[in-house]
Length: 84
Image (cartoon, rainbow, N blue to C red; front, side, top):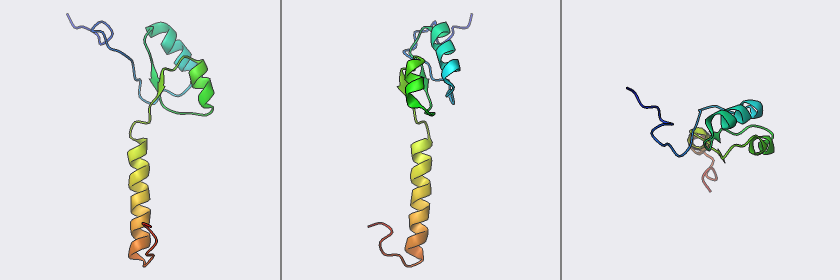
């Protein structure tokens, strides 16, 4: 018989892309485990809904790669201050 991750004793749940405070509150209540969420405005509403942690997922890497690309293009165009 398959064992669910909840039955296996996971420390927390991370339903990827969970951002809606009303849905966060429902998930927290039904699962009775710490729930990680993605950021949304206002952040305080997520905390009030019971979110245990705000997770950025791949957002930081995506932002960094975009920034790297823009600065590289500036450097290639002759802007010596692109990485200063």
